[in-house]
Image (cartoon, rainbow, N blue to C red; front, side):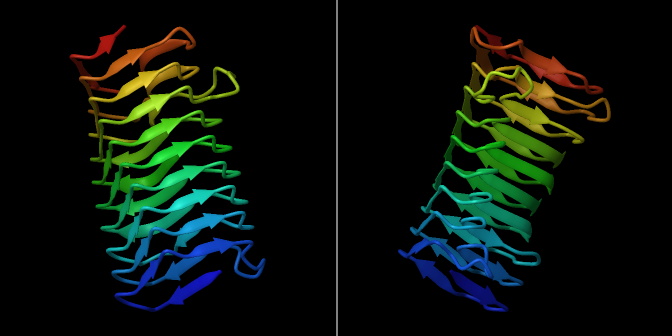
Amino acid sequence: GIFLDESENSIIQTCWITRADPGILVAVHFANETNIKILDNYCFDNKGSGIEANPSGEGCVIKGNHVYDNGVSGILSLNATGGIISNNIIYGNVQYGILAYGNFSDFSGNRVYENGKTGMYFVSINRSTINGNAVYNNEEHGIYIEGHWNVCDGNVCEANDFSNTASFDGIVVAVGDRNVISSNRCTNNDRYEINVKDAICDRNLIHGNVVFGTDHVGTINDNGANTLQADNQAL
C-alpha cells in the first residue's frame, strides 16, 4: 500500500491500490499529517481498510475515490480535525463504509452502499456536517451519529438493515445533544427511519424530513429529552 508519516501538503492521486501487504493492512495510511489530499484513487480488495487517516491529522481531504471490497472498512478517519470526505463511492466493505471520529469535518456527496455494517458511523464527532450523501442497502444502520452540535441534512437513507432484522435504522442519534437532523429522505429502513435512541440525548432538532415506507417498524422514534420535532412528513 501507501504509507505517509509526518508529511505535509502531499497528494496521492489516481492510483490503483489493491491487495495491500498484511504488514500495512490498509491501502492509504497517513498519521500525524496536515493538508493531505487523497484524490480519485481506486482502493479495493485490501486486507485492512481502503483508506485510513490516523490521529492528529488536520485538514485532510479524501475525495472522489472508489473504495470497495476491503477486508475492514472503506474509509477510517481517527480524530481528524477539519477534514473533508466527499464524493467517494464506497461499497462492499466487510465492516463500515465510513467510520469516523473527530471534529469540524465535512462528509458530503458520498455514495455508501452494501457494506457489512453501518454505512456511515460517527463516534465522538462534534460540530461536523453530514450532507447530501446517498446511503442504502447496508446491513446495519444507514447513518449513526454519536456526538454533539452536528448537522445531518439532505441525505437519502434507503433500505438499510438490508437483511430485515428490525434492529437497525435509517438515521440514528445516540449519546448526542443539539444535533440537527433536517431535510433528509428516509425510506424502508427496517426499524425506524429516524431514531433518537438514548434517554441521555438532549435538545436535538428533527426538522423537515420525509420518512416513509412499508417495510419498517415505524417512522420517527424519540427516546431523548427535549427533542424538537417540526415539519416532518410521514407518507
